Length: 412
Image (cartoon, rainbow, N blue to C red; front, side):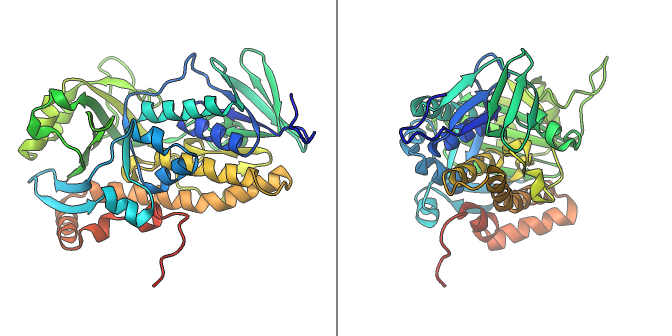
């Protein structure tokens, strides 16, 4: 290992996982002056074709990393977020985004294809030049002591570092070795997703804003990606796991699967005409099973010794606050900031990281679960929700504690 100009050895970070969280961790560690080795089990980098929303709390981090221009080349920046009734089609509330989000939170609200965000981070890691990326490299185990952490790959390779970051997602092996706390739980919710070029849709179905359609035991979200040229649509049904005709229930880990749109269309029987028309206009859908964990209970679920967990490995959450990728990027930024600071013993630094992150991540996990109940409300609860949204509007759907994270308090 080469040394910095001052003669001190580089500090070495090992990162498990090459998704959005792992690349964000590699970038943040590199910015802190660390050398990084990243291990991705897939033979090539890539992300599945789904869109994600990234609020000002996330785009502010990307701007700090010098990625605003790159983001502007691939993302869309919706003008507003609209909530509508899936049954009647009535507009229930509107939250202005665009310039108003920038004015209020210092950064834009963006919608982006996951693959585009992944590629943006990968290019930044390459440009930084501090990371060695290992593909087709599945970790088999790790050990740690007071001086170092060592990982073994399933192919027999051995690598030593000062820090191991477990950013290997929902089914994290690093988490199992570190915490041994079981598998994620299946929520009973199914997500259908599709992306289509907007030019292939009738003009009345195209959109440059976010629309959330709320209905009994389901909701759909649509928004633009790829500078507005594509439309991303996600429908979530509170319907339990499907059963294969001649086999066991669908495996929860197999999340990127071909889907039969008939079950989604059947769930929308009686829904508003424009919503049904949008779903019928999309020929190809994918499906995944939503899994999560109970909200974080203490900081030791985030870091122990020389090992830190990040993103879904630490706090997988339901998508009802659109913050899964966002919390991974926030985690990475916090970790990088601490690693660049005072050179305390690394376990002390990681304990500080855990203390700073676990309660925020717990709050987001809890709010996402709560939002799911609100989005899918039935009967009198649904009626009360709709009336509240019509009366209070943006006060209910803006989330200052989330989007304003890290900003100085607003004077009274």
